Amino acid sequence: MAEFSETDYLVIGSGLAGLYFALHASEHGSVTIITKKAPRDANTNYAQGGIAAVLGSDDSFDSHVEDTLRVGEGLCKRDIVELTVREAPAHIHKLAELGAEFGRGDDGKFALGREGGHSARRIVHAKDLTGAEVERALLAAVMAKGDRIRILPDHMAVDLLSTAKYGGPNACFGAFVLDRNTNQVETIVARATVLASGGSGKVYLYTTNPDVATGDGVALAYRIGAQVANMEFMQFHPTALYHPLAKSFLISEALRGEGGVLKLRDGSTFMERYHEMKSLAPRDVVARAIDNELKRTGDDSVFLDMTHHTRDFLVDHFPNIYQRCKELGIDMATQPIPVVPAAHYQCGGIVTDSSGQTTIKNLFAAGEVAAPGLHGACRLASNSLLGAMVFAKRAADAVKDAPKVAPPAFAQWSKDAATDSDDAIVVSQNWDEIRRMMWSYVGIVRSDKRLERARRRIELIREEIREYYWNFSITPDLLELRNIAIVAHLIIESARRRKESRGLHYNLDYPYKDERYLKDTVLMRGNGPTI
Image 1 (cartoon, rainbow, N blue to C red):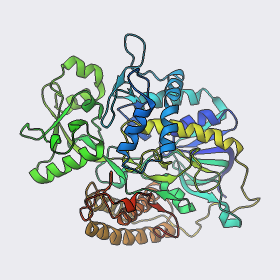
Image 2 (cartoon, rainbow, N blue to C red):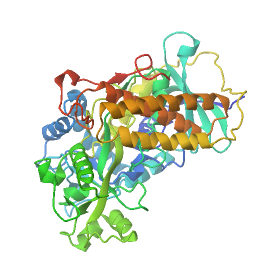
Image 3 (tube, rainbow, N blue to C red):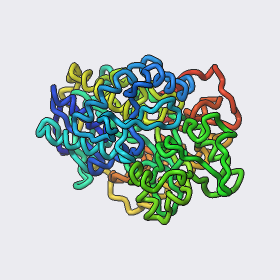
Image 4 (tube, one colour):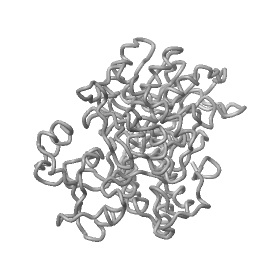
């Protein structure tokens, strides 16, 4: 029989959203955090730029709200944006109180940067390692809580536990969890379950995300019957370092905030042809512009020029980026940095309300995995870590009243007939095919023909995965493949249903916005891809 344990709150993911939730929820209950690898292996740890908040005297809440709404292309929920922006400063100060060391000026106030789409300097940062600093501080704070918060590294959710299997309305009461060290499946029962598992960048061939970003939370929620929205809006970061040894290395938008200029190989600029803000245009505009220029010229990359700054300035403001470029033979003080777009951030996700509650009772979500209505059709730079904090705290407040819904008796994990596979090439081959297909057919620029090709192929791949899943013993690779296949299918289906171009979704067959599609694309079991 599988191992069994109980906790008040089960958290899936150890990035900012998961840790911040745990810190607050531990004040009124026990918390168990599971994380696929080490606790620091989260998207948060790779975030470079910073956190947006109105802290400057020349800034205003209204300005931050309007910037967010403008970039979101009509699909942000104004009430969600307003509460997020207004609660932001308090959370920045809370992070500082917990030990996060952000850059400050000589006056002791936060040193504020500017990024694309923002009309003012409002980005709090720790040089170009903001996410790593936030993760460090939060992990230290969590460890200081002692037995109130238990972290289980090398544990991966297999499926959520649903009361629907035992009669009555659908509610979540925990999860089946794979211990990667023993390959045994455990049952963890909880009053409330919180999905904080981050995004799905690994669905694409080229991404700035770490290997753990396989869309697990969205897949888990969809399988249990939760609503998922706006999965067609995958944000491609315009500037990932182009180098054969630079896997997943991001060149922060903060460089363009400090005057970095995008250029072609011949040294000419091009962004003025696409947007009045030039190199500081919103990410979707910049990514499409670069994609178009690469296809037009046949070049492998464009270039980000920072040579107008002194070496001392670059080393002081961007030490991590400077050092990594130097290791690869690129001196950003004297030569432009080769960059290309890469899948970066999932703007859609699991539908939640302002407290992180999903459409399934006792199942909550916060951070990149969730879609409360903050980002709309395109996320404003540095609103991601901000949204994770705001809704993690709100979820922590809400779960206090979560009732116990676990049935008095329920089935333990069982796949007795399954055997170990001697054909693991099926997993690696399908994994590679999905990522290449998504990059080629469902990337920065789409078309009906490309989407239809992707739909036909993903259905065949998922049928192979289903057969493999039920016949053989589960492994972490198989679970991740199962999840990215579902997420890929959701992205494809959402993109097929949006017959317009808006924000991060650009379809050559419908190049303009259509007000008939000024609404969310919502999928759930029964009206979306077959599980």
